[in-house]
View 1 (tube, helix red, strand yellow):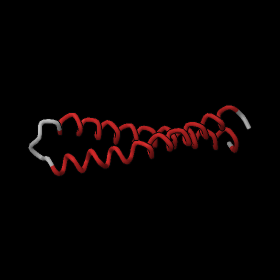
View 2: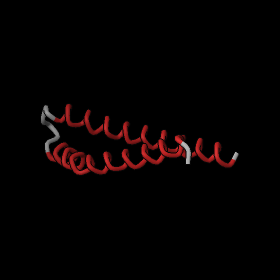
View 3: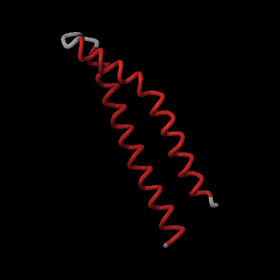
View 4: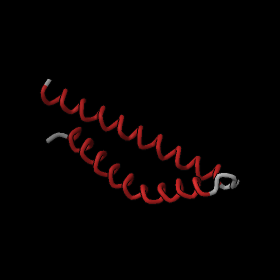
Length: 76
C-alpha cells in the first residue's frame, strides 16, 4: 500500500471522528438558537454552526477527491 492510500484513509477516519465528536455541541447550539431568537448571543453561535457546516462540506469534497485520486492511481 502506498502513501496516498494511507493519507486518504487517515484523512477520512480522522475527519469523521472529529466531525462526530463536534456534532453534539452543534446540535445544542442550534437548539439554543431556535429557543432564543431575539438574543444577541445567537450571532456568534450561528457563525460557529455555519463554519462547522462549511468545514464538513469541505471535508467531504476533499475526501471524495482523494478517493477518486487513489482509484485513478491504482486502477488507471
